[in-house]
Every structure is written in C-alpha cells, then in structure tokens.
Amino acid sequence: MASSHIILPKEEEAEAEAEAETRLGTVVEADHDSPAQLPLQDHAPGKAALPFSATCVRISRDSYPNLRALRNASALNLHDDDAAFVKLEEGDYGYVLDDVPHLTDYIPDLPTYPNPLQDHPAYSTVKQYFVNADDTVPEKVVVQKNSPRGVHFRRAGPRQRVYFESEEVKACIVTCGGLCPGLNTVIRELVCGLSHMYNVNNVFGIQNGYKGFYSSNYLPMTPKSVNDIHKRGGTVLGTSRGGHDTKKIVDNIQDRGINQVYIIGGDGTQKGAYEIYKEIRRRGLQVAVAGIPKTIDNDIAVIDKSFGFDTAVEEAQRAINAAHVEASSAENGIGLVKLMGRYSGFIAMYATLASRDVDCCLIPESPFYLEGEGGLFEYVDRRLKENNHMVIVVAEGAGQDLIAQSIPIADQQDASGNKLLLDVGLWLTHKIKDYCKSKKMEMTIKYIDPTYMIRAIPSNASDNVYCTLLAHSAIHGAMAGYSFTVGMVNGRHSYIPFHRVTSTRNKVRITDRMWARLLSSTNQPSFLSKEDIDAAREADKAANNRKNGENAKKQHASVLAKGEK
Ligand SMILES: Nc1ncnc2c1ncn2[C@@H]1O[C@H](COP(=O)(O)OP(=O)(O)OP(=O)(O)O)[C@@H](O)[C@H]1O
Ligand SMILES: O=P(O)(O)OC[C@H]1O[C@](O)(CO)[C@@H](O)[C@@H]1O
Ligand SMILES: [Mg+2]
Image (tube, rainbow, N blue to C red; front, side):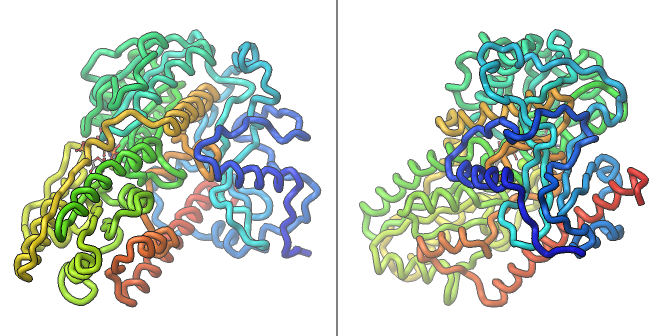
C-alpha cells in the first residue's frame, strides 16, 4: 500500500541543509565529498544505481499522477532530433535524472584510466575528493511533503576513472557572442586546470569565435601564456557572431585530432555547441564537448546565474551614481541610464535594487506606456514635484514595441540572427523632454549609456572564483567522457544536457516576489491592469505546463528508446 509520505534518508537531509547554507554564500565550491557512509563507487555511466537507501518508506511510482502523465504523454512537440539524444532515468519517489550524453553511449568498450588527480600532491590529501558516480543535483529545492523528488542533473566534479589518457588529450577553447566579464578567467583556468590537474599540455585557442575553427590558425596555449589574462577584460581569443558552419567546424576538429572542445558563450553559442556534439556523435568520434554558459544578460535557463553578471551589476552602480549626482544637482533633474538586457531585464532589476537611488526601472518583461493615468509621464511629473529630481534605469530591450510605433524601421539583425534593437534610452530622453516642454516645465535630463563599459571590464573577485570553478567542473566532466553545459544549479555545479539550456530563456517573472520588491523599492507604477496581471499569471502557468509537457515527451521518448514500453 502506498504511503503518502516521503522520508528522506538522514544523509540527504544533512545534504539538503548544507546545500541551503551553501546557497546563502556568493559562490562556494561544492565539496566533492561523497556521502560519508557510502563507499566510493565507480559505476559505468548509464548504469547508475539510484542514490536512495533502503531506509525510506516505499511509495509506488504510480502514486504520482504527474509521473503517470510523464510516461503516457506522447503528443507534445519535442524536436525529433532532440528526442534521440535525451537520456532520462526514472527512479523511486518521482525521481528523474535528466542525464548528459557520454562517449560510451555510442562508442562501446572504451578503455578507462585512473584519474591522475589521485597522485596529485595538492589533491591527494583531500578526503574523498571524487564525487560519487550517482550524485545528482535537484532542479527544484523547494518541495512539499508529498511532492515527487523531481528532475535532477548529474553532479559536476572529478570521477575516479577518466576516458582520456593525459598525453592523448588535444583540447581547444573558443569564445563566441558578445563580451562578458570573466571570459579571460575561464580561458586561463581551462588551460591551467588541464595542465595542473590532468597533466594535459596540448591546448589550443580558436580565434574569433566559431568561424575560427575553419578560417584561422589554432593558437597553442600554455599556463605561462595565459598567466595574467584574467586581469584584463574581453577575450584574448577574440569573439564573433555568425559563422557557425557545423560541417566545417567538425571537419576541422576531426582533421586536427582535437578530442576535447571547450565552448564559452551564450544561448546561441550553446545551440551551436549542441549541433557540434550531434555531428561528432553522428561521425562516432571520441570527442567530448563542454559548454560554459556566458552572458551578462543572465538569460540562460536552468542555471542559478551566469558568470560576469555580478561584475556587470556592480559596474552599473557607477553609472547610476553619476546619473543620481547629475539629477540631484539640477532643478527638475532627470538621470536616465540604459543597461544591457535584450530580452531579460536582470541587470536593470538587480542594479536598481542594489542602488536605492532609482525611481523607475523599465525592463522588456514588463510593458509600460507613456501617457494617461498610471503612465510614465504622470509618474515623472509626480516624482519631480515630490523630490525635484529622479533616476530612471531602462534595459535596452524595454519598450521596443512603443519605439517601433513612433519610428517605423524595418527589422534588422546581427550576423547571428539576433534582432538589432532601437535605442530606447535616446528615444525616451526625447519623449520626456517633449512632454516637459508641452507642460512648460523647466527640466534637465542627462542620458548615460554605459552598456559596453559594464561588460568590457575584468571580472570581480567573486566572479573570478566562480569562473575558476566552472572551468574546473568543465574539465572534470570532459575528462570523464561527458558532453554537457556546465552550470550552478541551486548552489551545486552540475552537468546539464544541451537541450535544457537551449530550449528556453531565463526571464524576470513579473509575477515573482523579486519584481514586487523592486516595485516597492522604487514606488513606480506597475503599468499593469488587473487583466495584465491575470494574463501574466496565465502565461507563467502555460510556460510551466509546457515545460512539464516537454519533460513528459522526453521521458516517453527515452522509455521508447530503451524498449521498456
Ligand atoms: N541555432 C544555432 N545553431 C548553431 N549556431 C548558432 C545558433 N544560434 C547562434 N549560433 C552561433 O553561436 C554564436 C554566438 O551566437 P550569438 O551571437 O547569438 O551570441 P550568444 O552566444 O547568444 O551570446 P550573447 O547573446 O550573450 O552575446 C554565433 O557564432 C552563431 O552563429
Ligand atoms: O553589440 P553586440 O556586441 O552585438 O552586443 C550587444 C548584445 O550583447 C548582449 O550583451 C548579450 O546578449 C546583449 O545585452 C546586447 O544586446
Ligand atoms: Mg544570446
């Protein structure tokens, strides 16, 4: 008879508490100790035993209606191509492992080697340094008494056995897309980590993004050549948009004998990494592909936050401070700051919350309007009367529909196919000036555009540590034969399947408490009617259902692939 309670084994409770503590800090390396009472195991990938002890009260899997739904659903839209690469493992109590691909999925009987870290003087003293092969990280940590254990990802970290001999490794590193603080730190730590931890000394830099795979020389990189690069902004390898030609890229990987590919970039780059992985697999090559997500927009799904984000938010404070000084030193002074954020307003939201000098924050996720009751002009009027000055922060992707109404311009795209945005800061400056003029109101407005300044700087101390850990986690995973995007999930470094980070985008939810905190800190109007709020809630619900549905389809595909149906 199925019980309705899930009882966590003691070690899991302790682990959950430790995880909660870890999350309170900024970035703390996940300790790589396995649960003390479990002997170190060395399962072959794909044969993972379930990380659950017999002390639990057993519950029938069928007692979870959503799991039944997961198994039965088949009509949902998962790209056929993706379904073939999805690896879902179902366990007790509603546990699902959304696993990453491994070399042994398509190359059987590969030899393994002891991890060289075992003999490393620095690491050999660490108690249980290797992660348990069965360790996984939950996607959601807030659960209810009767909720299923939910989706998990493979925990990042060094394995006891690796699938490459150090002297055979030929690794390459590429950076793609826009700049972000910390790129050079990740490059440095990949080169140094490969050399210092795994004695890998054949590392090459691909120049100027994806096209560099087939159009430029590969740069040999050594710990000496990258020693100081983390102190500089940008990327020493160069970067670009466009130019992703899967066939040409994989031809070059194959011809040059590269067997580990480290790809640093945003959502577009991770999509490119996934295409490269699929082609490598089609050709049956023994090559591991490790994606390291990069974007100051913080719009990559699943992960807690992307590297460089904190640095960018910190740098944005300088622009906001300047705007505040200028505004407060004038009569009816307005300081307007534009920050990056194409589709996601995280930088604007966090910079506003951190500053406390901002009176209004406009982001792409929260539509606003200018005229009439509850509009921006009315608020500007009120704020100037109350306080004599005000500061507005606007994310670059905000208000694009409004601008398009007043300046009809044909859509333009960059080389990667991203829509080129119109300058909302400049547009808003003119609109506010015109409004004040029509009201015969004396005012001064200073428009500050620090967009490139906040991403072209070196990473701060905390991002530097985060970059280091991401690079190390990527190396451990590639050496262990996995292909993945690495990222921090609920404070733990994890290996996430490519399809999970490329299928959706992380956005500010205006129905979440964080946006409410922002509204209460600025006192700005929400620009939303009750109908808008209901619509936003419905959209959130639909997005969640879609996500569950996609999981169901993947689960079904995975079961079919294993012939377990
Ligand atoms: N769907 C895709 N398939 C294959 N490659 C892609 C895809 N989308 C983008 N790319 C490639 O990925 C690289 C980077 O993409 P993009 O310019 O969109 O930046 P990004 O990685 O999203 O970073 P960011 O947006 O943070 O600047 C480009 O070389 C582009 O050609
Ligand atoms: O001008 P670039 O280099 O194309 O980059 C601009 C874009 O890059 C990002 O920083 C990251 O996607 C966006 O916020 C911005 O729109
Ligand atoms: Mg992008």
